[in-house]
Image (cartoon, rainbow, N blue to C red; front, side):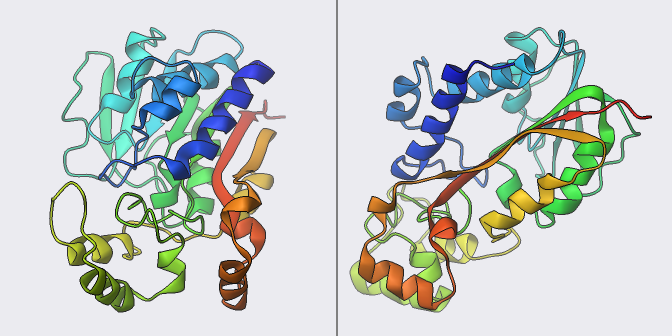
Length: 288
């Protein structure tokens, strides 16, 4: 099992997520040097590699077969092959270029939804999901699928962040660094008008503000699921021992009284607004 120090580092990395510029992809990979340097890692890709090691540390023995949910173009699979020496890795995603950037004899790719995985029961030593579940429409169905295809004794490891109701849950941190929770405080059209009025653009220069706002507010790309639902979805998975099921909360200092009052009137609780990430670790039980 992962050491307490290692787990504390993982949580600390999550709590720093809202302060870090995010990638422009739907997966919102962590890239800011402050995050991985504070965690003692060497490169932006090391954070993912770190979590693959943490996931494997829960397993009793070396993993033989792993499923990476949300593998994107394939780099998410590479760490299990190159760092852990896993003999068989399957990558799953819905993007058109699934697996395009990493080819290996031990890696296969599935272009399908996490809610309906066409794999038989009890296959994988590890079902691993990193910064993906916040994009899955029906997280309850997906977590049940994870439980179904994990073999007895195997591990489900899911880290979702940033969650929608957190201050930068829209994944456009660099555009709205000075305007936390803008996606909860304004409608799509109001945000577009706000950007035009204040000259707000994406620092990367890719596409105009309208494109980015339409993307971030589109439920096709973000499930907009409340943080509490993640806990509920993982609480009673069939034949799964829950090892960790928790929300990673930011400090209340980021939420001033005026803003909290505005958002509270819209129905958001303190926990929802501060729930930056969700971590779930479960072990599949032997069937009786």
